[in-house]
Length: 116
Image 1 (cartoon, rainbow, N blue to C red):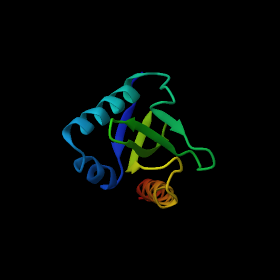
Image 2 (image 1 turned 180 degrees about the vertical axis):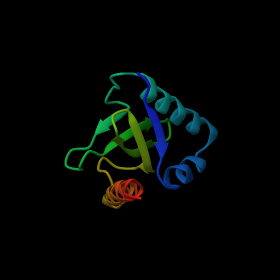
Image 3 (image 1 turned 90 degrees about the vertical axis):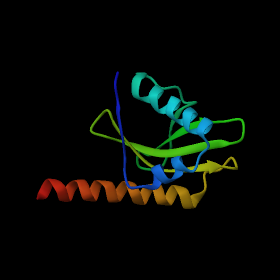
């Protein structure tokens, strides 16, 4: 299994670039796992109920838990949107709302490109 991962906007890239080298390596490891493993364990990729098909990529480090919102497009294409450091059990509403908005924007732009 080989999934393709792309980024929408700069939100993920901005988040990634702020991380320490060891944390970036851990993120890279999880993304490589998601690219190549057919059934990804929930420890690394979790469907978020009630979010219109949003998922969170889960990266745990010795310091904190990182989350990266994403969604699938056209089967094996994964689109990364925003990332954040999770400090409590609940996902921050602000981050979730941003992810929903970015997903909507992505599909609107894709639809516009097809029309042209």
